[in-house]
Image (cartoon, rainbow, N blue to C red; front, side, top):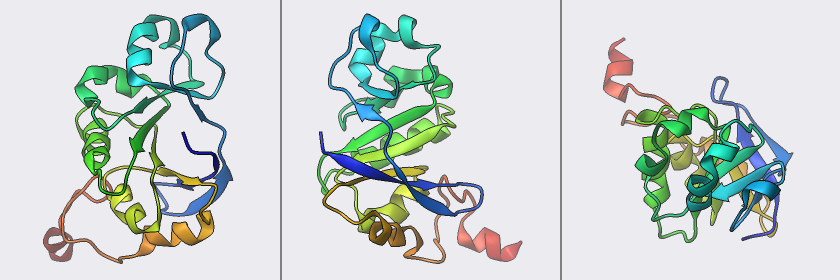
Length: 171
C-alpha cells in the first residue's frame, strides 16, 4: 500500500476536477466487528463479511487486478466507493474492470484508481468511468491532473462519451 496524501476528484457532469485530501484507507484484511469508517476492503474480505457490511456507506471495496467484477455483481450498485488497484504501469486489467463495473453492473458511485496512477493514464482512466485518482505522496497531484485534458476529442465511444465522434459530428 502506498502512502497517499491526495486524490484528484472529477465531477463527471461538469468535467471539472479538484484535488482533495484522501479520507479512505485501503485495508488488506478485515473482520466484521472492527471495520473502521472510510475503509476500502479487498474484494475477498468484502465477500466474506458482505451481510454485515452491505448497509454501510462508509465502507467500500477494492479490486486487485485478478479479481473479477462479476464476483461482486449487483452489489456494485449498492456501494459508494470502489477502488481498482493498478500495481504497475504495464498492468491494464483495471481499465476493463472499471468499465465493466460502470456499464454491466450499474455502479454509479466513486470509481477510484489506486496504485501506479499518474498523469499519462488519467485521460484513459476517465474514459473508462473512473472519477477519482489517488496520487502517491511522491507525485504532484496538480501536475498529474493536467492529464485529464490531454486530448480535446476521442474517436471511440466510451463510458464518459458513449457516442463515437462520427455520430457526434452528424448530430
